[in-house]
Image 1 (cartoon, rainbow, N blue to C red):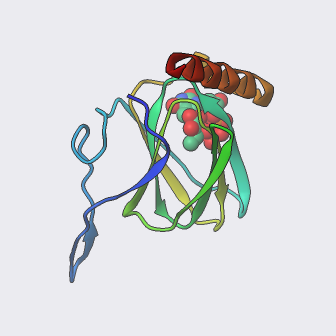
Image 2 (spheres, rainbow, N blue to C red; image 1 turned 45 degrees about the vertical axis):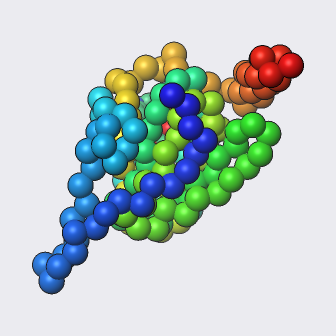
Length: 144
Ligand code: T46
């Protein structure tokens, strides 16, 4: 099931001791979690990503710091500011993504629906554009 990129706001259990967010696969995110990875110790304003995925579904969460994510899909660009551990960004399917680690204390935690598979990556931008065009022409053909 493919969905356009969008933010998910998690419920926060807050009391005088601090805050707790719980994420349950298939409940408050739309897939079962097969893999968790996190990215940290990034220099300030470094950008990572610059690729798309063919099928992978992921939720990106800045558990610390501030991370700007740019998404390109269906010929348009959208920007998401991950500035709270309460926010998750759902990415599924063919979305060209870049993540800018705005503060050097930023930690990006990612929940993914499959194990690591390099063959799912589209790391060449021209290949991404070709795949997008194929997808869009197939979509328009189906609707005609
Ligand atoms: C994504 C964004 C948000 C592994 O061995 N296992 C893994 O599960 C992952 C995710 C990566 N790797 C290896 C592959 C590379 O040799 O770690 C190295 C760095 O990966 P990459 O350059 O793809 O990292 P980012 O930050 O550009 O992208 C990562 C994810 O790879 C990608 O799926 O959507 O974060």
